[in-house]
Amino acid sequence: MIAVDARSDLINEIRSINHSVSGEYLRAFSYESLLEYLKHLQITTEPRDASSVWVRKSGKPAVCTRSRRDR
Image (cartoon, rainbow, N blue to C red):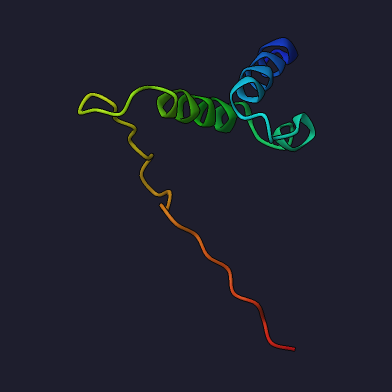
């Protein structure tokens, strides 16, 4: 089990970069998902050049869409 403080620290760090996300929303995600998201956010704050690389975990789609069901 992940310590509550460690999870709270992750959420606080994410919110320091992404000011639009609420803590309540983030608490719905696992520690591992939060850590992956934080790493992604940290990469986006670095200057973009040949050394700035972020590799998506396999099995995760780059783009997701949803369509509305007609009534």
